[in-house]
Amino acid sequence: MSSPVWHPFTQHGLGEPIPLVTHASGALLHTADGRTIVDAISSWWVTTHGHCHPRIMAAIAAQAQRLDQLIFAGWTHEPAEALARELVALMPLTLTRVFYSDSGSTSVEVALKMALGYWAHRGAPRHKIIVMEHSYHGDTIGAMSVGARGVFNQAYEALLFDVVTVPFPAAGREQACYDALQTACMADAAAFIVEPLVLGAGGMLMYPPAVLAQLRAICAAHDVLFIADEVMTGWGRTGTLLACEQAAVSPDILCLSKGLTGGSLPLAVTMASEPVYQAHYAPDRSKMFFHSSSYTANPLACAAANANLAVWREEPVMARIATLAARQAERLEALPGAENKRLCGTIAACDLPGEAGYLAAAAPRLMAAAREAGLLLRPLGNTVYVMPPYCITEAELDLVYRVIDEAIAG
Ligand SMILES: Cc1ncc(COP(=O)(O)O)c(C=O)c1O
Image 1 (cartoon, rainbow, N blue to C red):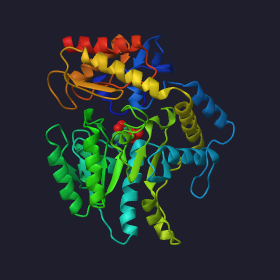
Image 2 (cartoon, rainbow, N blue to C red):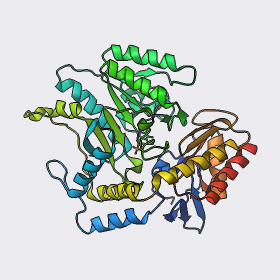
Image 3 (tube, protein in one colour):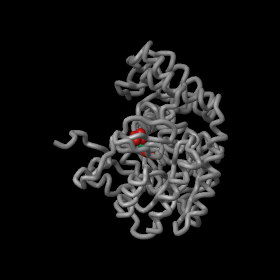
Image 4 (cartoon, rainbow, N blue to C red):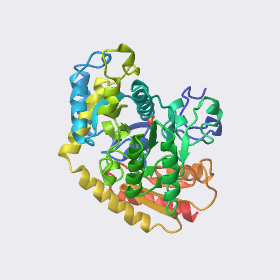
């Protein structure tokens, strides 16, 4: 009998091989059949400092000796307290409160509920959410609702709520985006949710910091909450700790996950501004924030996140990011035949010639060729991107670009 495991975003009916990975370190995965694979996509964008970073692994092991899990409604523990204090010190000044959950999608669900709660508890309910064309915010129902509609959520369309979509601010089309956002804001929207600088799953689509700053200014001018979903862009991917930093943008609500634990354990935070928190703060129990999951602020995950912050404080992480960004720029530049080359910090992307769209045949072909060559790649349709852990070596990166180059040539 085949494995009973049902994998995400995997068509088992195609019978493609599913490699069994036994251990990992740095940018390398090791398989049960003795192969070494370069992880060019940070295991779905989570691994920042490399797999099994010793400091993070040690922190998890130490925490496991003390406290494994604790109900977080009305109880607390030091790893969560310390992490929240440090996040508040590190993130934009407007963000004073930290709500824990366990994935990027749940951090988005929490952000949406906070936004609607904010308006409801102020006695001026607003429900409309504004989103950007081609966005992706996760796969739960609310997160799918605020993401682009397509083949991946077509079957669940009936459950998705209506949103107002503004055009992606492609070069030369920025004004159309600003105008649509302004119009939507003027119709009493509750919030605008956006991926700052890079729309990840939508095809690594990039727009400049000045545009992000303008989008934020429009929301501020119309008193519409600005939700920055930095689940993918956070933790250095775009060259700065947050993408928002490059535009001097302070969101009202910020979603973080993936690299929060260095990519080691599932954890997310939704950080909120004081007015959002205060709207829920009252002697009235009916105004408390009605959201929880069993593993909210799991102590092991919080310990991993605290160790991640220590790595950021004490290791030359920004220097590694700058080096990787420069290497990505050189290699992308040298890639012949690639279309629409684009780069933002450590994220490099380009399009393969031919059919576009998520189901483009180029993706499974390239994925299979990469697997054969000892490389983990996962193109988005005909868009190939490279988003490795910051510790990837030159030789490993050479392999990545050699395989992409051969794929384009082939
Ligand atoms: C911008 C963004 N938001 C939310 C999510 C959802 O995160 P998760 O897969 O952890 O639920 C992702 C996942 O890739 C993402 O890129």
